[in-house]
Amino acid sequence: MLLNREERLKRKAEIKANAKVYYAAKRKEKGFVEKEKARVKAWILKNKEKNAVIQAKRRALKMNAEATMTKAEKENYANLVKIRDNATKLFGYKWSIEHIIPLSKNGTNAIDNLEVTPLSWNIAKNNRSSESFWG
Image (cartoon, rainbow, N blue to C red; front, side, top):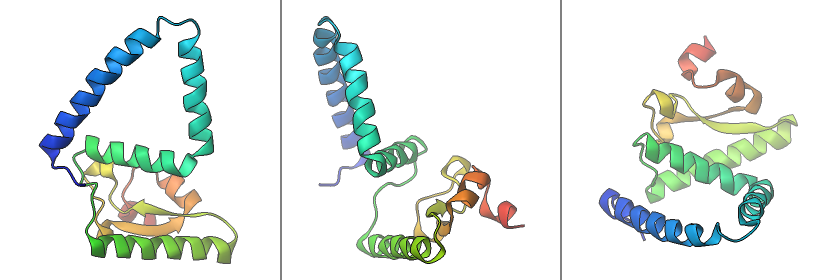
């Protein structure tokens, strides 16, 4: 079920209000905060890929980038994932899918703004555009 921006914001506000009530009651319990932090940390360590996706969506929404894809865009992205995985197997080191123009520089999640590069290049590039990184 896809929600438009207004519906997402309304739902987000409802969830936030419910969570506030829940956690206000739970914080009164002895040791709850420490247990909750440990639970979240364990989940993040166990689900690194899921957490990366969640964080990417949060950053995209924060920067007003579109986080939903059409069927064709999903197929194109799936092809990029295959290319990334094949390159990792072929060359023996990790490759990543990165933004040519970073989201922080008003880039988008459109397929024409994504490329497959070695992970070390992506990390070194940081939030610079690929044009300046490639030379």
